[in-house]
Amino acid sequence: MTDTPPSEPGKPEKQPILRAPFIVLALLGVLLVFQLLMAFGGYAQRNELLVSLGLFPARLFAEGLGGLPGTWVQGVVNLFSYSMLHGGWSHFILNAVWLLAFGAPVARRLGPRKFMFLYMMCTILAGVGQIFAAPVQNYLIPIIGASGGVAGLMGAASRFAFSDVRWLDPNSQNPERRLLALREVPKRRPVLMFIGIWVVMNLAFGLLGPYGLASPDGARVNIAWIAHLVGFFTGLLLIGFLEKPPLSSSGGPGQVGYGEWKNPKK
Image (cartoon, rainbow, N blue to C red; front, side):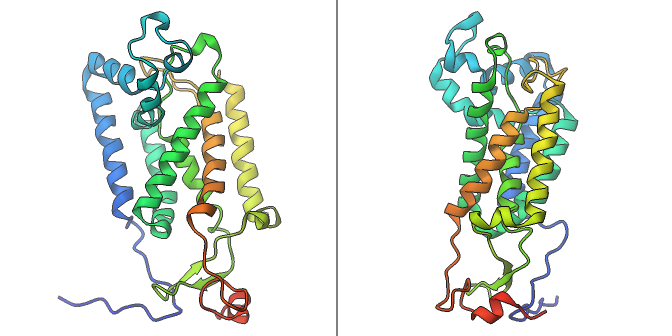
């Protein structure tokens, strides 16, 4: 058995392609369990999960409408529980891929607690945005899917994934991409392109279906484009409150001089 030598200071730590933090894999595992229950549990169980965990606007805005069980208290709980269910395997797999792709770097950067706080806040606010956009005739149609939370992770990652400036993390001594200040985002063309493509794509989805709501039997799933947009911009903003890199006396992030920060050695 051989030990892996530690990475040299100033050189990026090599990450296996398929490795992801435990918190991301645990979250993915929970989503997989619920997807298996939805896929193989039979119609009665699938319907029970939808009624219990799905986000129904009626529970919050028109309690008792259509004989829907549950009160507004359950509706508040559903603002997060709806993310555990998906409308089919394609819906689940797409969210799982994006969760691994964007959740892994965000979790490595923030740690498990801040990661889950970010994910939950993006999920909840995405659900809030979606139910406020739902017309009255859709109050009894459940909103489901982890897309809002995953979109929030995409928004958070965009604050550092496109940064071309690296700084030395004093804790690990590994170079990290600097978190862009919010005022820098409009000045970064790659970030603006990423945001623009995401916004335009979801606005296009909005033209294809009525508010992106899922049907009760899971046979038809439209895109929850409003939840996507709200979740994305929540993550974009919130990561700035969860991570504030220390500034050196020279104005550079971390314990580095301005020259090293502005023009890092290759």
